[in-house]
Structure formats: C-alpha cells, structure tokens
Image 1 (tube, helix red, strand yellow):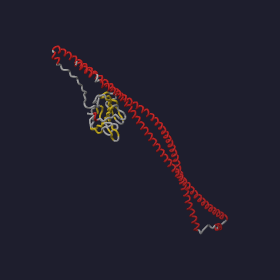
Image 2: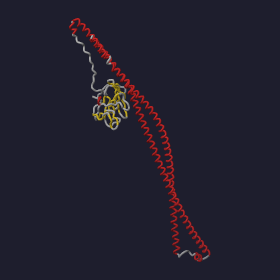
Image 3: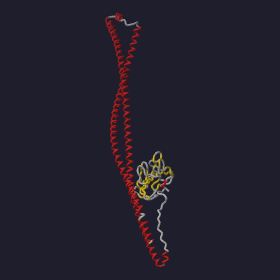
Image 4: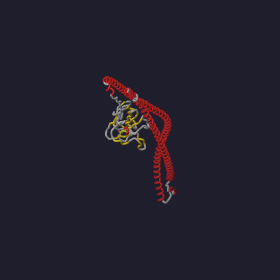
Length: 439
C-alpha cells in the first residue's frame, strides 16, 4: 500500500509540478511580446504625429524659401544699381580729367597774354605814358605815309582790344570750368555716398539672408535627427519583436525537450517500480521474514543547477562607471575599459535583435534572452568594427561579438554594457544595475 502511495506522489511530482513554471513562462513571454508590440504601436503613432509636424515645418520652410528668393532678387537689383552707379562714377572721373586738361590750356593762354600785356604796359611806362597819336600822325612824310600810320594805329588799337577781350573771355571760361569741375566733384561725392548706402543696404540684406538660411538649415538638421531617431527606435522595436518571438519559440522548444525528459524520467521510475514489485514478489515467495523487513524506496530529489549568476562578464578590463546619475543624466549601463585589444562576448544564450551602427551607441549589438522564465535585453556598445553577428541569429553564451572600441558617442575605448529587465525601450526605463547579475 505504501508503494502505491509513493508511486502516485512520485508521478505527481514528475508530471504535474514541473509543468507549472513552463505555463507561467509562456504567459510571461506573451505579455512581454504584447508590451513590445504596444511600444511599437506607440512609436508608430508618435512617428505619424511627427510626420504631421514635419509637414508643418516644411510649410514654414517654403515661406522662408520665398523670403530668401525675394532677398536674392533684391540683392541682384542692388548689385545692378551699384554697377550702374559705378559706371557713372567712372564717366564722371573721365569728364573731370578732360575738364582739367581744358583748364590747363586756358590757364596757359592767360599766362601768355598776361606776359604780353605786362610788356606793353612796361613799354608805355618807359615812353612816358600813353602813345601820342597826334605826334605820330604829324610825323607823316606824305599822305600815303599818313594813311599807313593811321592804319597802324587802328591795328594796334584793335589788337589791344582783342587781347583784352580774349583775356577777359578766357578768365570767364576758367571760372566756369572750375565751377563745372566743382559741381562734378560734388556730384561725384553724392554718388559715392549713394553707392556706399547701397553697399550697406546690400550687406544688411545679405546678413538677413544668412540668418534665414542658418535658421532653415538648423530646422532641417533638427528635423532630420528627430526623424532618424524615431526611425531607429521603430526599427529596433520591430527587430526586438521578431527576436522575442524567436526566443519564445526557442523557449517552447526547450520546454518540449524538458517535458520529454520528464516523461522519460517518469517512465524510468515506473519501470523501476515494476522491477521493485517483481523483486518484492520473488522475495515474498522465498522468505516471509525478508519481505517484512524490506525498506521503502527513497523519493528522487532534483535540484536546479545554478552558477550563482545570471550573466557572465562580456569582456575584461576596469569598471569605470556604473548605472546611475552621471553628469546630470541617467547612465544606463556599465562601462568597462582597457587600452589593449580585447574581445566582447555574449553574456548569455539568446537571439540577436539588431547588430548595426548607431550615432550614439556606435557599433552595437542588441540581444534578447529568456532566463528562468524572465525576459532580459542586453546591449553591447562602442565596438571597434562592425559586429560579428547579425539580426535574428540565435547564439550561445560566450559567442564572439566584436572588439572593444571607441565608436559613436564615446570619449575613449570601452564597452558600454546594459541589462534591461524586459524589452529595451527608447527611454531605457528597464535598465537595471549590472554588477548584481555578474559573477
């Protein structure tokens, strides 16, 4: 009777109890997958909203581009005016040079006449005053000589008059030419001042154009970075969903294998029990005393094997920073640094979510794990070269991922190693202290 009770208890222990963790694990895995899907849906919705914001910003950019086009048109018009003014200035300078030449000729003629008049005045002074016309006429020898003397006197008088008139006219011409030159110079100064004003206006317009262009470029850069960030997160969440699904399938396969092992163990125990029963019957037939003192079989005890740690160290080196606040921001991982070339290896069995280059993480590997019914995500960042594994690949603990490096947002060679309890998310809210998980 005791053997029957023992067999029933053993069957219950091997058949029913081990199945409960598997059921709980499957439900937990499904919940994690639903969480990732929900995160992905939220990210897609955020991306949709961002696309709306992008459309609004693009409309604003179109307005800015219109303003820039207007400024460019004004700049071209201003440059055309400057070219025209410069041509006028050049022509004015040429006119001034020509006037200077004319003034020089007039001044030369005036100087020559001044010399002639001075000599005539000198002769009159030496002769005692003005010419005695009566004396000249009375000195005529005959009537013909008288006519010659009268004509000579008239010629001298006319020449003197002509010299004086030309001298007067030349002096007036010099005065007018000088006034014209002064007017030309004043006009030139006004045109130069206008030109300087146009240049200043052009400079102001160009400065405004540069300001608008800088604003436009900044908007485009921020928009591009934000869109790329959303795109990278959505891509990571999508890949994570596929990796978690693969991990769920791997977990189910492990549970099926464990169930087969349990069935084999149960069958083995049943076979042992049948052997015990047969032996007991043989013993009862041979000796009643021996049968009465037969000891009861001890139940088989199983213990879960444990190395004491969930993850292994992914690399060797010195810990330079842990999880927590650093420089006013949350540092979501453990930093391990060394100057030598060291390998980075998977800290546990799992499935690669993504292996790619990110502006922040540099060359990075994301992995999904299911350990003791709990889903984890690990991140290996700043690797030297492209990762040695690829998305969707199932790998074992210790698999080579790459070498420690200094890529992405990094200030020195090190491995940035993250552990997340559950799926990874953009805010890294699931990041946990790493050291308690390591041996």
